[in-house]
Amino acid sequence: MAEVLNIWSGWPRIVEIAGNAFLFYALIIVMVRMVGKRTTSELNNFDWIINVMIGSLAASGVLLRNVATADAIAAIVVLAACQYITTKLVQRSRTIANIVKAEPTLLTHKGEYLRDAMLRTRISEEEIKTALRQNGITHNADANWVVLETNGQLSVIPRQDVAWAEAEALSDVHAPKELNG
Image (tube, rainbow, N blue to C red; front, side):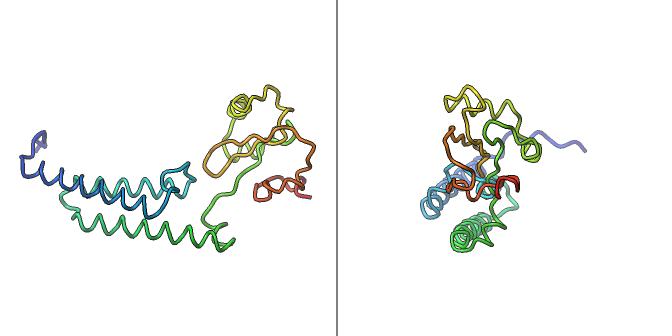
């Protein structure tokens, strides 16, 4: 039998959904304040996945009759706690950081494209050129390095008389072995 178009569920269901929406709205505000700014900043892959999961759980708790509100709240609270604990562990342990977080990737070196890194990260020349232009650079050779950061942004380091090994801020960037010495 064909399903009937479900346009109206009645006032009791509308009130239930509105109440749940308000409850989850308040919960997410409290959670963001407790977990910190990282929840809404430029996200790395790990943070982005957590935010999508929390959004999905909140939507389920608001709209799905077979998901109890308390169940969805419990899942969101556990995810927020896991996120908080994981970020604390990442701060304290390089091993855990290597497991959880992606590392930045070098895409150009002294104006030369690093094709293997570009293929691995699926970044095109056009995307790199856009990042150069956004940083006021009109020639590839005017940038020492372009780095794909963990949040998906491209960082451009303008031309300087600095060797790769001397660039302290780039020590965690994945680069070809010949650059690392």
